[in-house]
Picture 1 (cartoon, rainbow, N blue to C red):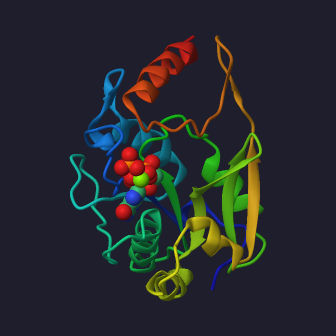
Picture 2 (picture 1 turned 90 degrees about the vertical axis):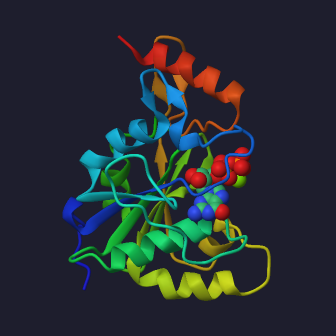
Picture 3 (picture 1 turned 120 degrees about the vertical axis):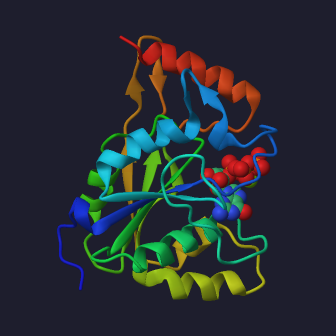
Length: 209
Ligand SMILES: Nc1nc2c(ncn2[C@@H]2O[C@H](COP(=O)(O)OP(=O)(O)OP(=O)(O)O)[C@@H](O)[C@H]2O)c(=O)[nH]1
Ligand SMILES: [Mg+2]
């Protein structure tokens, strides 16, 4: 039974890194931004926010558990979110998993605290928004939704995270843009291409005091 408010010890974090990185041309988890890989940036941000971390991928270079997809095929990030839910359900005392994407190194340091504070019911999902856009891979998910998500993925329509959310009780949490020395950084800035990586390097510089 979920007790509210949720506490850090109720939540496991899973980094979604199971994509093909086709636009980048090499595994985004291992791409370097400054002196660290994108995966290390994301793990540094996520680890203080949750009781334990894992990575949704077949194998991981860091010393954290790998949580492979359990559903083959074209479910995309939904397969990763499903694997995260099943993983969380198997851990003692975990009621929720938070998912973040390996290609967003600047996500908020209060992501989990704010998503958790927004939840009003055990079955509710919290997702992040910024600048009026929602970021459904940055979600806080009850692990009890795993079977429902698996059944939904198994039907043949086109599957998008947004469509799954439309069928559920969802609360959206708006995060502000982050002031830097240059201009305002969207904390969910997403690195897909080599050009995005160059832009991320500029943001990293702008964030340094
Ligand atoms: N588990 C899993 N995660 C995925 C899959 N496809 C994408 N993702 C994840 O979803 C998030 C957003 O995906 P994209 O930005 O499209 O990343 P990507 O698919 O690796 O990159 P592209 O091949 O260039 O589209 C990333 O965290 C990916 O790792 C998939 O098939 N399985
Ligand atoms: Mg993709």
